[in-house]
Every structure is written in structure tokens, then in C-alpha cells.
Image 1 (cartoon, rainbow, N blue to C red):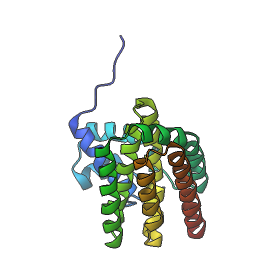
Image 2 (cartoon, helix red, strand yellow):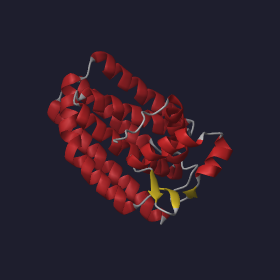
Image 3 (tube, rainbow, N blue to C red):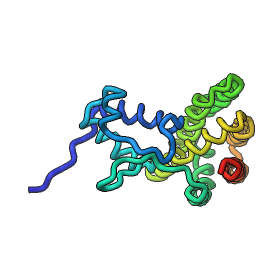
Image 4 (cartoon, one colour):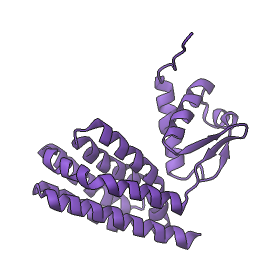
Length: 220
């Protein structure tokens, strides 16, 4: 008899979001081995929804489930980061062009508000908030492409990049260059400059690569 995987429960969605936050903010450190029993005890999570959440976070490359060994928070590797950014560079230009064409004026205003909120959060040293706003900025642009397959792929890449960005901002205490680039991207898209949007987004990705790799090399 064929069996099917039950759909995620709301409880597993909540646990997934909370566990992801622990990983993205490095409270659960890269390379750390964790156990279901410890997570259940520390956070009061149920076994079945926790397992569902772990499987989904493994699919997002944030956790690794090692047979006969356990669960490990995926390490931050400069080589993995470079590979991920290569993948990002291949798709981000066409995606930016689609978003530039299709963003509504309301969405552009929302992006502008996100940039302003990011600046305020960075001034407070709240890099967790900066990280959340950074993902929301790129989520809006991904959704604006109107292509659910492209959007899903972009969001996966941005989720992977999120930890690297946060680690760099936290170490350097400075997210201003990335936020300034976001502001420039919004203004270019407001002018419906498709070529300019593609160029600015590619430059944003390459600048992020340079900043994060530099930070990781110093850390190592």
C-alpha cells in the first residue's frame, strides 16, 4: 500500500519558524550537534511537529540529518557561500528585470519603508531585525517576478545567505553598505530602468560576496 506524508501541521510551522530563527541568529551555532530530546526539553516542542520542522529545515540547507549520528546545524563554509552566490548571480539579473517591470507602486513604497526601517534597526545595533528586513526586501522582489518557480528558488538562496549576512553584520557592526544598495535598487526600479535594475542587483550580489568572504577569511 502506498503511503503519503501528512501535510505540515500549524504547530510544525511555528516550530520551524522558531528553530529557523535560532539558526539564523547563530544562537544555535554553525556545526553544533543538536538532539530532538534537548530541543523538546528546552523549548517545549512536541516530537512529531519538531521532526516535520527539522526535515523542512534540512531541505533549506540549514540543518543536516546524519544517519545514525543525529542532527547538525549546517556549518558556515566560505566555499559553500561562494557556490551559493554563483547560483544567485545566474538568476538574479533576469529576476530583477521581471520585478522592475511588475512591481506595483504600493510594493515600491513598501520596499522604501523596509529600507528606512533597516537603517533605524542598524543604528540601534539590532542586526536580527536588519536580517529579517533584508529577507523581506528580497521576498517582495522575488514574488514580484510573477514566476513561482523562480521565486521559490530565489527565496531558498536568500535563506541560505541570511546566516552569512547576519554573521558579517554582527561581526563588523555595520550593515550600511547593503542597506544603501537596497535604496539604490528601489530608486532604479521606481524609474522602471530594467537594464539598470539588472546591473544594480548583480553589483549588489557581487558586493555582498566580497564583503562576506572578506569577513569569513578574517574570522578563520
